[in-house]
Image (cartoon, rainbow, N blue to C red; front, side):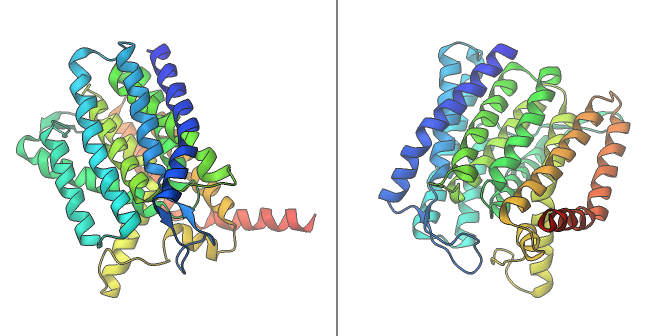
Length: 354
């Protein structure tokens, strides 16, 4: 399994590395660009066709894995169906990035696409109680899976406000799940999560470190949410339902927290839930006086810590201990979220004095 995972990790990374400049050129040529405004932190026009690069790198790697017969024949339909559903979501995102789509129409499009994914068999069928027992969801699996996918798609989309933030969080989450897959997952889950890790890590070069930047755009951030949600469901089929699904949610603690507070904030103000604002977590970090790059790495650090908590809990071999550790980690994060900001400001002050 390690050989196959390394193959997909590096092939996805290499494909994304070489295809992203071409995708960036396509974004400029066809007007898939992001203009600066009062809510955004960038000051120049940037192509936002990154979802195409993610799509080509990820599914190109899986195509090579199919050709090398790393993926069992009975699982080929899963890859083909996911590629079709993903293409539809990328097209919806590109249309939004280029021409603009009302939030409600975009949400309706997401619902239709997700229902198609459920129709293809990508659904949560059962759930493991961390305190013992497993129960089948039956027809409840459909609305739960719908909520699962829409949650992933929109939380990743909402957190995508700084260079490299959402792609980096997905990369850290993917690497965490990759480690878990070596112990609990099957070959398809391991290969797919390795490909996603390779794709997102490679894309960070252009999204975070490269002078000629490219943004994910809605087409890319929504795609990452769909892929991560789909892979988690595929991994949960192999028995580690509690481990895969809940560790995925734990690693995405930052986007989930940001989305929950955004919805609560807008409901209290009496404005539409989909109305944009500049009060997201990353905006508040910038208002606290830290730079864009520092804000991104602070949120990377929190995601990394949440991933470590997840790994420790899953390897405790006691689901009750795992549940307690995860709950404790979330409580500590909520209580201490201002503490590490104060420490960061003190550290920056010391560096500036020197």
